[in-house]
Length: 222
Length: 178
Image (cartoon, rainbow over all chains, first blue to last red; front, side, top):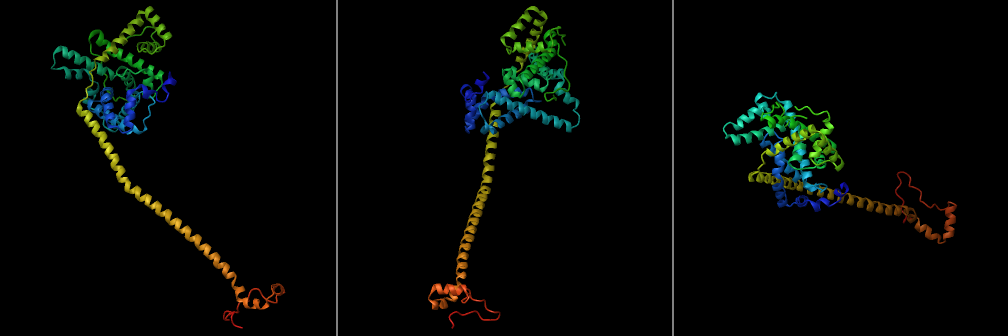
């Protein structure tokens, strides 16, 4: 199976997005736009859970597509297009996290309001649900709780979860995207799912809001 | 946090998650299924893992508006035009460099040609200068008329082959004077 996957032209035949990317390599602007339309929301969806806010996630998404465009001449169809693309997403997110950590080191300690923005789940939920009808409020509250639960994962676990859950990637594809072994992915996902279960269990069982994870924002170090 | 059953160590947790993700081979999957059948605690653990995982589906879908697509395309176009501009800026420099290289090559070739021609001309001049003593005594040699006799006279130093250099202050020899 693995040897079949490495066959030259294999992905070109099987993956229409690989064919589009090959057109981009030949400076076809329409093909690039088509690829963007197909993938931008998927990339943004992943980066939204890795970046501190939507605006930062949008900037990173644009950075991803700029990199895709810059790398077009050296593109070779050695894997599925989505695997190649999310490898870039992973690198962009990792770089951004490192830069953020460097900036944080050179700045004063975070203000209490900053901590609330990242980890104060209850304040966050109250702020978003204060003036809404109860059913809508419950839905919004649940989303915020799930979103906040993801911040309990370290960035590598979160990346593995997002690729597995949202992109439906196999362990092998996640391993290729993140540049780790399949057994490492298995371990990352197992720990992540156990953490999610532990954090969300009180909410599932009794409707209680889980404890907040102060100081563990999306860019929290590994 | 839940306390895992004695069997629920980290390895089993990883296998349960991999089972839920369909990442186990047939033999490993059968082993997990036997375990699920015989251990209600493991069954409960799998149910909780699934329930919390399913909650992620509640996260909102991400919408991307047309403005975002347009901005990204504009960014790419900006970059492309930036690349083109920098290529255009570097073009005169490339042409200048190429012109300089050709000039240098031409100069070197011309110099080599001059040196070669010059050395050929000097060789010819040297050969002619070597013949000067002979020319200076040509009239005397012609008077002998017999080459064998002349050779003998030369061998016996009766006739010098090369004229003696003039003494300092003397005027140069004039062969056509008696």
